[in-house]
Amino acid sequence: MANLRKTLSETDVEVRFSVPSKWFRENLYSRFEGKYFLDLPVKDRSGEVQSFGFSVRTKGKHLKPVISRGWRKFVHAKGLKPGNKIVFVRENDPEMGTEYTVEVVKEIKLFGRDIQGRV
Image 1 (cartoon, rainbow, N blue to C red):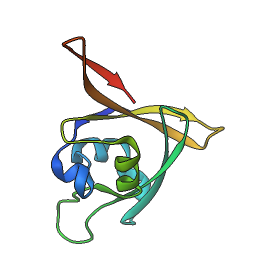
Image 2 (image 1 turned 30 degrees about the vertical axis):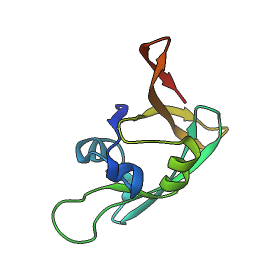
Image 3 (image 1 turned 90 degrees about the vertical axis):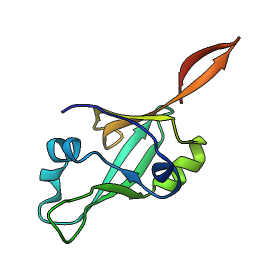
Image 4 (image 1 turned 30 degrees about the horizontal axis):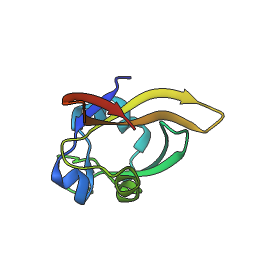
């Protein structure tokens, strides 16, 4: 399973996280088993478990997968802004009950140089 890396848009930060359809089909679609919602616990870099609600459209031929439940709380807790990057890394942790880790990558200016910081 491939990692998901995405630069956040304004909609991703203010409303819901739009999941790229190709990644969704390759990694999560089979787990929906005919349903339109999937609760997926993920671990953040600090080891805290976040519970994200993935959902897809109930009508039409395009699924339009999104993370809605739990996403805004995560956005506020991490201080996310458009342009930050999110990385979902396939990393099974049976002890925590998670199979993905979510990382936040922010551009940081340090001594006049742009560097990337992971949160």
